[in-house]
Length: 345
Image (cartoon, rainbow, N blue to C red):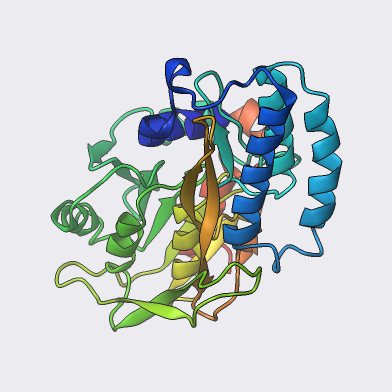
């Protein structure tokens, strides 16, 4: 998971990372370490959007300043300084917060201490996606249970698809009894793909989320909520039961997809709680040329609630590792199939 995030960040943000030859400050002195530290701390103090929301779950930001300033004053190298800043930013418990230098990228592990709820070896077996699946626009799809259940595996919202491609995919499920959309361990991507996909599962105008953005430097200086409206797509709308499979690896845009689909008629979330990530990321550049990414805008769900720490499934279910190992079965997929076929209610 960390590898996926780091590769994505390198691809998207490499233009923000200065080469060693371009450093604006001599990083061999403690004073420059302190200068960059103070700059970074103040940037987050003014622009990071979750201080109020997380006040009971993270350290006070002023206390963090005093604690980490001591560590900064003891730094003897750029690498050591980088690690101190990275540790400070990880105090925010935010997967959208990263520090990028020419030699490393930091990230917060939002999946730590949670079950993965996915086994890729089982998923790639002949029973599921080992053979006989089709692929279009980043989406793998096929039918299960003798054609009764449609199955979509979408592993990254960075993979773009057209409405016409999704039209065709859904049309192949015309004779199914229900559909599974498996977005487990999807780390996010383009929110436009979220809106596009949701539009094929609604039959009336729908506001799935709102955004609020900083309008001042105070921790609670936010705009009024701005709504995002999605219209039903003028094409194939899937109107049978849908089960969206989730786990802790569902982050950022996938978290938004989860809360956008949750509560829709005919739709249920099944699996584990998502990883969260309800902030839209922004970037700032330190005087030494390093780049920091942070959550700068909050996306609220349809009830105007913050889901930074994740979305609860309608039906909580974790992967049975023994069943996966001994029989090659994904009990989360099998349970969704059972719900669709009416085996369980």
